[in-house]
Length: 65
Image (cartoon, one colour):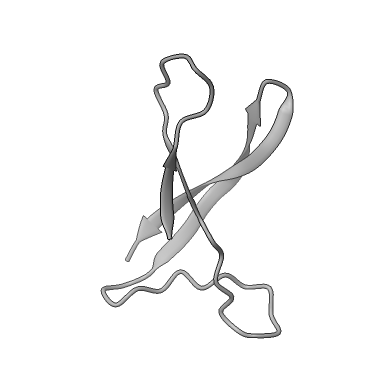
């Protein structure tokens, strides 16, 4: 399930997509980002996302291969 979320009530220049994480292996911590057409690979550093002063998530940059 993929949901589109807008943070706050003001006009935003960025939108965030939230989805449930799927594990690559049942007992592991690696995330499965595979699709029927390819896969998503994380690049760069994660960035903290705040709403007011509360940490609500981390932003990842993904590239599709």
